[in-house]
Length: 133
Image (cartoon, rainbow, N blue to C red; front, side, top):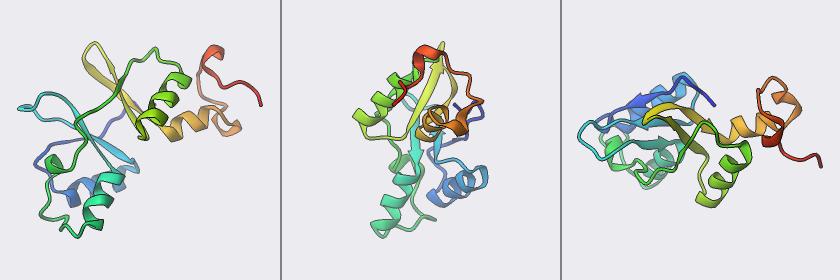
């Protein structure tokens, strides 16, 4: 999981959000709205859907394109639990919260890294690792 989380506001334009996501090389940003009911998430898919629909990214606001029905993960979830939630929900990012605060964002890429040889440095308990094929 990435503990350095890109956060943006709902009044940012999609272009501003896309620029920040590209600069930080992340596929999602947590949307913080002090006047809203909770956190949202803006992903690459959300930006692509808007542009694909012909919207101007300089005029469209994050708040109109974010996902507000967010699934949150706890830090003690196993990688398997996180992967199951992502597959069932058809999304690639989970916001991890601890004590009501954002602890990080877990992506499908993070899970795959830990389940492959390239992820040998992942500190994952053996019980959370995928079974050998």
